[in-house]
Amino acid sequence: MSVVVEPILEDLASGQWGLFTAAQARVRLVSRANLSHRERDGRLVRLAHGVYRLGGVPAAPLDELRAAWMSTVPEKLAWERVDAPEIVVGGAAAALVHGCGDIEPAPYRLISRDRRQTQRPDIGYWQRLLDPDDVVVVEGLPVTSIERTVADLVDDVGDLSLVGDVLADATRGDRVVDLQSLARLLAPYAARYGHARGDGSALVEQLRRSAGIDDVAVARALVQRPAVGAAFANVISQEVAGQLRVIAEQAQFQLGGYAQLGEQMRLMLAPMQEQSRLISEMADAVLEPVLRQYREQMNQIAKTIASQLPTITVPRPTMPVINFPADTWKLSSASPAVPAPKPSRPDGRADSDGVEPMSDHERSSEAGETDE
Image (tube, rainbow, N blue to C red; front, side, top):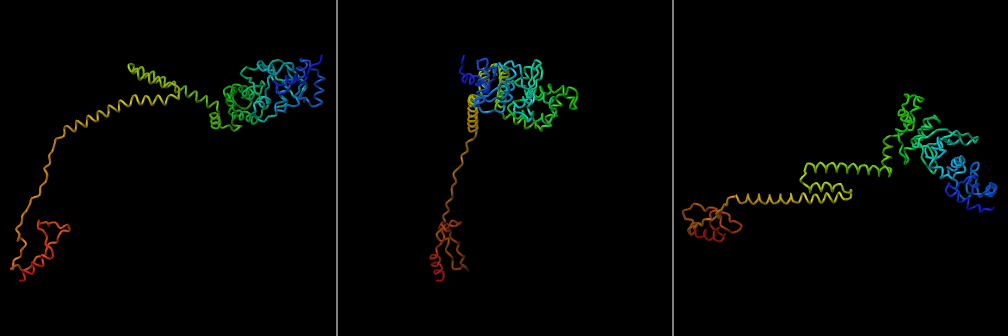
């Protein structure tokens, strides 16, 4: 029975990073001879024993690790193994998938619930029963969590500076490292590194110091992450809403009869975008009557003061009229001297004695009469 091979292989590879196993192809009636023929002419690339990549698919950094993991249960498709994985990537290989540190991942540490043995130099099995919280899916692979990975590296690698770099890289990414969980996982190894038995927190601090992790920088980077910033905003909004709710309840209890004020306080619990409008409405409703009453009181006070002031009538000033004889300024012949005339005012009005000043012509005529 002949089959069309290319569509089958493409369908297999489409959901597995462009990879497939010979066992998966055999289930779909594609013989190993067909695979070998395509490998020779370049249409397939062999990555590991029984694992191939389509020739037109570009290589990826995790291809070899993915091929090793796929080869452990070759009959199953990759997506079928993620929900309840029999094999979990751990150790330095898990750190590679997390994108943390620079520890050589090979041979790949694969964690299994059952005892397994292999002659392959690129794979090493650990038999361990993992807690569900210790397993996460990253890049489509089931791997140990960053906390479990760091703890396993402390046990396996032993160089705290290298493991500290893994922890430092984890704090710089989008992940949030649970330091309490990490301390719990590191507790069995604390005495090995000079700390009190079971003191995983001290070992965590030693790792952080060896990697130069700055708490302030970590906190700043954490807050700047969009997801964390949105979570903080949500927490703050909930806290503010809770405080406003308490204030409204207290105000309603203390001012029980003031239903309108209670309604205004309840309106303050509306969404944040409505708060500005509500505050403006409250100001108009509360302040305007007070200001109107204040203006009316001030006007009434001013009118009252004005009505109590006495009425004072000031008389108009009058100037007395003085009439002098016509010969007041005539000089007798017995006068020894002629007094100097008083200077005239520039406006031509009478001087301070109320007499019209004499002109130069009048003074000359009067002097001539005197000489005669």
